[in-house]
Image (cartoon, rainbow, N blue to C red):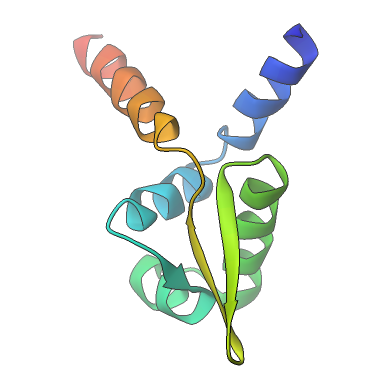
Length: 90
């Protein structure tokens, strides 16, 4: 169980992935939309989205020729909010 928890935290250990999660709190988006809003390259955005998806934080929905990403479980938003509050107190 501890290894599984550690793997989840590793998926969140990269600021770029946290930034993408923050963007997705506004609603679902494509890789292109996230690339534009984040300023990351398309390859980098895709890599981070794939890691977040593999960790179970994101859902992918194919719509026509594009794939839309969204947050799989809103509890990740609460986890990020709690950690931001903790860091803000330090």
